[in-house]
Image (cartoon, rainbow, N blue to C red; front, side, top):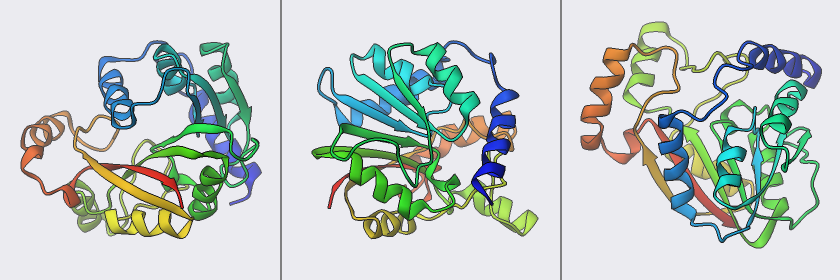
Length: 233
């Protein structure tokens, strides 16, 4: 899909959600707490959020004292992020060619977006490029082998999809994601399973509650999603 077509699709996706939730809801807050507590960024560390959307994570991270920047393909989302976090430097751009200098950031985050990029290897390589030598990348991605995703595939004969962005979406297993990140030149230091479901629009509330109750017994490779913490290779 051409960049222009993809940008139009994401603009429409964001247009439908503008003003939907001006504040971070408690579930998002718990998720963001968990993510930043995995990496313990230093006060006033420089953060770049790739595919920052309307700036929810930028707003949260700024509240934790980080100096925040963001990039998103959707100019509509970038405008919303700038309004939400006036102090942030937010630019329109592609993940495959980040509009920032090399060695610029202590932390690069990409949360639930790498699976949507047309060239995820090039995108992850760009994240490595803009990291400082001692920096870390925090990459959150869905698991192809999550039980609900397997059930979706068995019923529909296709890969799972969430959030209404099936026009550009590819899932992988934990090893599949690890291999991709290593191919991009990153070193995977650790990965953590995440089992709380709230983002999907294809799971009933009852099924979500049931999964959240039993998820502690699920092996990590069967988790809903993973957070990878990476360093430069």
